[in-house]
Image (cartoon, rainbow, N blue to C red; front, side):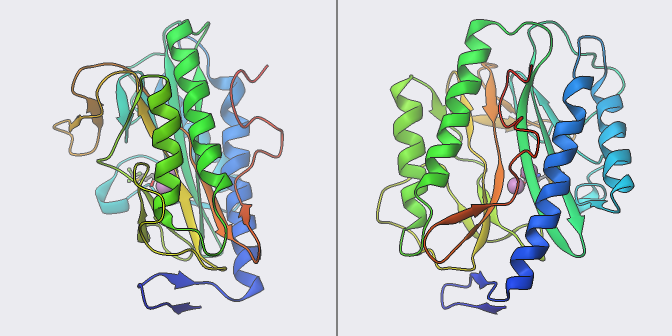
Length: 266
Ligand code: MF3
Ligand code: CO
Ligand code: CO
């Protein structure tokens, strides 16, 4: 592994790809595992406990627990919460809620970071459509990844697709390099212009994790110091995959082994 002239790590050992596959798989399996537990009436704290136990059963460590003082093993973000919702034992899921569960597993020192949207009970049409469009935004971003592409190309395709539906793209958080660290260069913006930003090279590892809002893009951090909610209280959705740039394209490390990449899951 070395750092290129733009300050981005290049993982040039095949063992690094192997390490990321393992970590990504545990994170994805955790999201698969939690799927059946996402039901009306369960608390986010209970879901978090289940995810932590699952990761530990696989010999993995939650990267979130204790990260800059973060108190839980996962982030669970409901409805108008953009990201970094802190699981608790008060908030029970209600019929029609949409929620993001974001897990990062550390396996043998490698970080696998992924999140999906889930529905509690029967989703309202507006929640369902927002999740569909957000998933498509992430996948369109992934589709542009290959050596020689610019990081700005990702944001450009995401923004174009989200705006077509009248949705907005959050710009206060971004995707990130990862690998043997959780958050690294580059910042992977979910808005931007084609042909701008650093150039992708084989061996770069990063996430794409667009947050898409039904209303305005702006958010505010709650007094817990973590949780971001939309200023206008309109709903927000997010999906996240971890990936690596290959010789001629991209390898996604966090696909669902069970094919549960996007809702509905049954
Ligand atoms: N998993 C989040 C991400 O996608 C980061 C969560 S950090 C935490 O980058 F401390 F809030 F858990
Ligand atoms: Co991430
Ligand atoms: Co994440």
